[in-house]
Length: 266
Image (cartoon, rainbow, N blue to C red):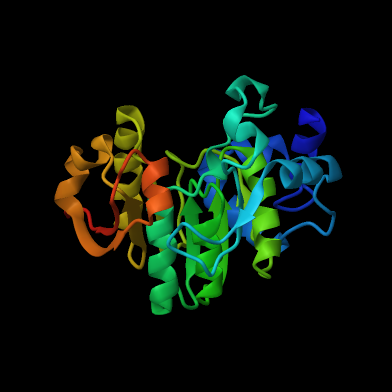
């Protein structure tokens, strides 16, 4: 199942992706735009992967900040919520939880469509794809999602179907450290979960936030590696949301999530 599923997911960005294209980091920007212009392949999602995800997730639109968006997630009513993690046949399903930083970003984009209207948007660490879906719902002209887990790409296709939006390209290359341009907006939520990642993210975001016309928004509920990082000196709070009780329980009692505008010092 794993090999067949991954082969099917290579079609997410079109029918002719090669390993060489994925690894040529110096050409990442060109690759992403080629991916966008090709769009989603006409071939259907691998049937075995689709069946697995539909059987082992639940469609919900409650208990979070964006009831307008329906998502396939792991919930207490799903088998793998209770089973040992080792029984899950793929990588850890981080995409199957609607994390609070992503919730805040999606809510903000839905409430403020002018932020993304006719904009080119990159959703970094997209997970379930909710922020990317919110960007499309709010009128973004082009959206590309990025998540290194190919199973997340499959889940995003299903979530797009649930919300009647055209599936967007999903890039599974690790983009942190690569050279990108041409984006009006880069969004990322819940990414500052380790010291090492926080450092590499800060360095990468600083370079791209200084590109004229590029805006960076970060969603985070106050994780330790975020609130203690030096990036705090370059953040401007633009919105804060109280988290629903269900989200609080899943996130160790975190009560709010914040959307920040990242503006590096010149």
